[in-house]
Figure 1 (cartoon, helix red, strand yellow):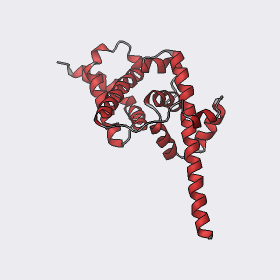
Figure 2 (cartoon, helix red, strand yellow):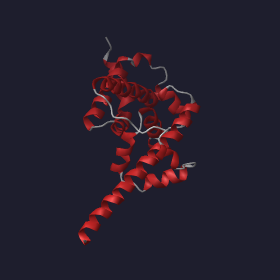
Figure 3 (cartoon, helix red, strand yellow):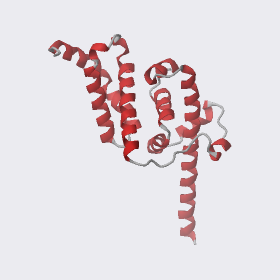
Length: 192
């Protein structure tokens, strides 16, 4: 059984990261409740494995790694329970038509979107791409840190980031064009 000193040490090391950890979970979750559950489960697993932590300076990366496993476990459970709708893949013809060779257009597209549109598009990304885009572009982790958190090679991080950005940009472009069509039809019906 752990002593009170261990609990105080755990609280002191995790407290500064709890809100940020919840933010990462919330950007991946389909609801606030799911994000809260994931964050709580992450902290429970971290407490359970606290004795295995070797480098206390890497607490946030360690917590993100645990969160990643919690999310993956929950997604696998949900996939077994429900039949998931097909997602957009990198082989999609629409995606291939959209040229995205640099970060410039991606950043411009993201900046023109509301937070709600961006989060909706992020949710539509396949998990492996969403995690990398989230950790790099929203959390600001470098390639090496992302590789450690997700337990993948740095080249895989770069590849998934590139593909994830292309998918996200494609989803945002589609959403913007659908919003434009809806606005045109609304305004068009008023004038007739």
